[in-house]
Length: 135
Image (cartoon, rainbow, N blue to C red; front, side):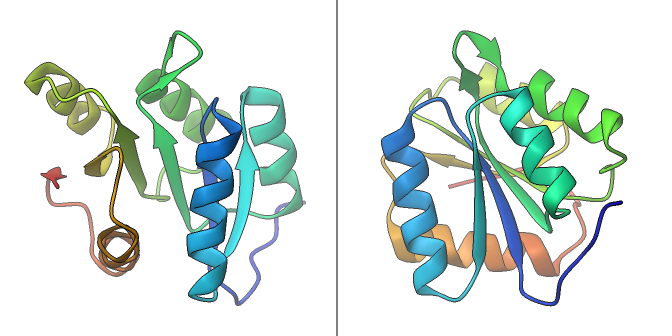
């Protein structure tokens, strides 16, 4: 059974362990819980343990589209209301447009500034998804 605790829980999905470590470090520093996943199996295990309040995902995951990955994850585990923030070193307008089409709330370019990342996490959690914002 899926459960939701009172502490904010973020599911970070990236195929680079060092990026996941950095995201978790930043989020823990501001009092958030952060689960890490590198693929669908580890994401499913994290969701089974605790439903995320926010998903932060790389746009490309080991050659797979991060947007398609998150779309499948949200459908498979009934997470349609969970906002998604996409991260990527890619900066093409097409990537940004595709992230918006797949339910992204924000698109943040890597490398990112920790205070900006935390600010966007806060905004993503508090506001309904009107449209994609690029930072």
